[in-house]
Image (cartoon, rainbow, N blue to C red; front, side, top):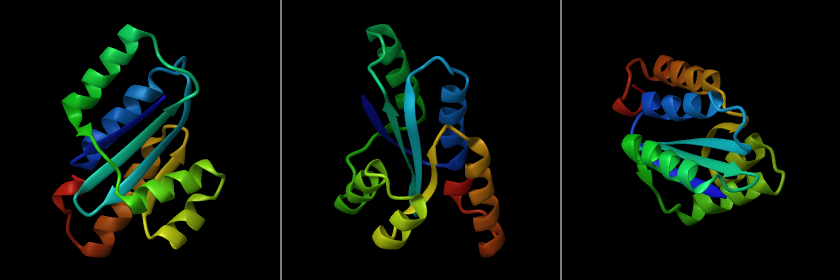
Length: 129
């Protein structure tokens, strides 16, 4: 079971990651966070489907903070490469996609990316708030 959602800023993205981290009993196989100029894409892969009520609740939370997204061809190829076992660095180099985090849910990687990006720019764009 996969979920692919768009979030407009880093805070909303972190809230979803925290939501998953607070549910260690869920069958999360991997969580991938991608930064784009206009926002964030989060892919959540589960080892097996949630119960019907858990799935409905989770989709409601995801829709509260963001919305489902259809990936571009480039993003789709990048996500498939990650699934095939390529490292995030290899995928970023080859597909020119900013993979912020891949694997276990971890807010610290998002925060570090945000901090480094803002430091390099000298200001904080709305998507990194």
